[in-house]
Image 1 (cartoon, rainbow, N blue to C red):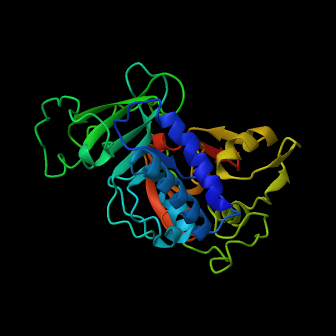
Image 2 (image 1 turned 180 degrees about the vertical axis):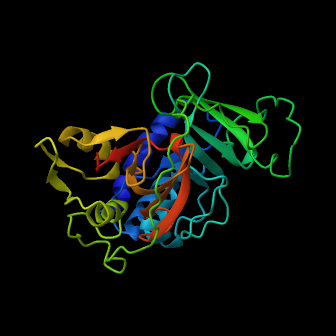
Length: 344
């Protein structure tokens, strides 16, 4: 039954593909939580989908996903390692191979969701590829778009990636044109202008970063005292809010304004916070909750440090780089969607 559903979905995808000239590999976007499926069931579905597409079109499918999802399902028991990988890995200088999954290289790296493209309003995803040939469809034109003269390399790292701009046109998810520019890997789109910080801001206090989460060995499939799943990002943040901020926080609770709300996945936290009376801003403070609401990343983290210029924060989190485990990292403020203030 599972294979039949995958093949039916793949056939619908193939019918859409046949309406267009393919220049690049077709893509399968794999990022839904699928909590009712096992790692092997997900792998079965993906392989059946990819096999059907290849049988009907001759094309290999490019797999789009992100590290936390791969790690959540134990790398799909290494069964998808032969598929080319398009990895969404933001807020890092260089992409890292997932700790699980068995992949030996990253074909395509999505490095931000806050890029800018002339003629398109708002933020767009930006990506880099190891090579143009690695992305090309087998049935695409033999004559790639003409290259612009490369920028003079500034360091051995500069010539490492092709810079790729994705420009959507028309309707539907398959009518997409691509512009390829060979250039410096660090030549990123101009960031959105940021407000100037107040002069001589007072330094933020620091929070001691330590993995004191009391349920680090519990089964991630079980429910924690705050009605989240153990060792997820939301469970760790719930622990921080209760233990460090002293606020009786649960998945279903009444806020300062007397209204009831449900927090759920991380992507809903900004909406729930506003609904039940908590302050949501773009300004970080130690003890606020960093929140991302794009796509299916569903992530929240605890702000432990804020730089003096308020342009970078250090966060504590669970289930980001370490599957169901603790980690810390520095993140530019402009790459975080919101900060939730529980103490104001």
